[in-house]
Structure formats: structure tokens, C-alpha cells
Image (tube, rainbow, N blue to C red; front, side, top):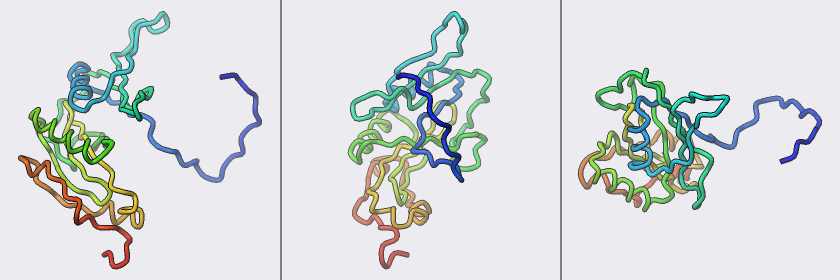
Length: 200
């Protein structure tokens, strides 16, 4: 890239709406333990880590991870920083009322089939399913990482299902079993369409 001198931008009347979240950085108690969770359980790929330099001879323990972006890596979607001063995680993860600054982190699987395969994989590894629900815009599984952070694994329902009334879709929920083969079942026949004529 070359440096260019340009005129100062016009000041907008309101904040510029972003196009999305770029990455998430998490403090973790044990970098190796969290590395295994994010790579072996969630399938992220490590793409980098902080190294010592002349300017930074003792860098923090920090690693960077990418999801699959159509077969390519991103510079990072998630980064982990070791902080041994973090408190112990709660004995049991819960969606609301836990003493955690982060409620949960949502991760999109590329398709319904990939999501179902990931759920089966996690169940085969003995990962505890904290919450299994259908939302009005996603079908979701909630688990927790070694630090107590909630992690939602989801696939998005088609846009036409929820775009007519996003608020109604966000408020709709169908709880499902979190154990056994029933936790892997996924009903797609009776999905409501929000904002459709006659929808309540």
C-alpha cells in the first residue's frame, strides 16, 4: 500500500454503522488448555502467536485463531491471552446470572449438516451440553469453555424466516433435550416464519 494524502472526511451526523465484528480476544487462565478446546473441540486453526522481539522481549502468552473462510484463513477471528489471575470458573455454566463478564460467544457452522456433525462430535467426546434450543433465527447448542465462558454453536435459518420481524424471532425459543440422541435431533418442518401474514 502506498501512502496518500487526502482531504479530511466530512463529519457524519451519526456514528458509521459497522459491517460486523472482526475478532474477539479472550483472557484465559491456561493457554494450553484453552488452545486444545478451541482447536480440538471447536475446530479453529492457530494462525499465529506473539513472539519476543527487541522492542518486546517478554510478550504476553497470546495466540491467534482462524475459522474457515471459504477455504482460506483470516488473520484471526479469536485470540487467547493467558492471564493466570482470572478467577476459577463457576462449577456449573448457566445462561443468565453467572459471575462472568461475557455471557456467551456465538460461532456459526457453515450448514445444518456441519452443525449436526459438530454436535455429534462433541457428544462423542463427552462435552456437556448446557442448553439445546431452537431460536427463531438459529438452531443452537450452548456449551462452555474451560474458563466458564459460554459458547453457542449454531446454524442460521434462512433469512426469509426471520427478516420480517427480527424482534419476534429473537424472542421465540423452543427448549430441547440436552442429553442423549434427542439432543442431536433437529426439526425443520414446523419452523415459524416471523412477520408472515397470520403470524402471532
